[in-house]
Image 1: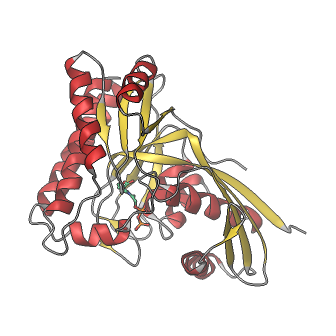
Image 2: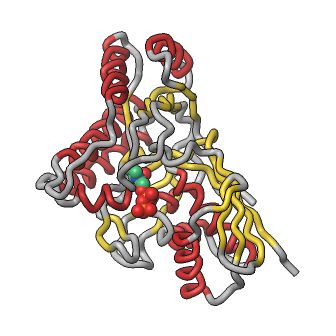
Length: 316
Ligand code: 2P0
């Protein structure tokens, strides 16, 4: 008899952002989003039988409410299973704009499915994981994935897109490891009160088509341009929210954004994307990433820099 099951999911960074919900109960997004799975950051999760749903991350007991609620969604959808002790090893810097909820809910969904011998495709697992966290939909697939927004619980899930031999790399600027002040879910609620919100949604649909074309043409410059425009417009929604406007940026975020413009003026391929935190991820190619990292490390001695490359899909 199975007593436990383990799965590993890597995190992903959205090049086209998910930033708003059409249905908060079902976690249906207002836009489709497109991501790159990263090799360097992942979550390994083991589920084992009870006595009650309980979460440990890196050996420390956590508030288990969100995991318990998600496991109950899976029980409703798929049929009952026993209470689980959920043991996660998280190799993603927590809650600082690197999406640990993406890899966490993907790994948890896959581990629960394995424990229960559910025979599901990665797309079907992605659909289930959406109810835990939207960005988790995209963490089942290697390299590039699109979360199709869909219009119902059945039609909103992610799938892989094939872009062979694109030498993309990210330089991750770890500006602050502090816990973020505005959760993604709350940030989205606020952003959706911006008068510019619908325009962002409409523009995102156009940008997605351009992004797909740029990936197929292996035009990394274009990929970077579209991703940066999409991310900056997302963050502009936070600043123009009519309900409790806010920003995830701090002074170092702005300084790094300026440095990226200077790198571009020097001829580097360098474009920025930012998520629900002050960190900046620089989109570049694998050849230039070490030089960009070195140039920035000299200039910003208190910021840590990592190079991240395309990563694998879910594994067991
Ligand atoms: C993304 N982010 O596309 C966007 C861009 C952060 C900024 O998905 O409410 O933790 O759990 O569905 O997935 C972070 O939001 O939000 C996120 P919920 P999630 O990656």
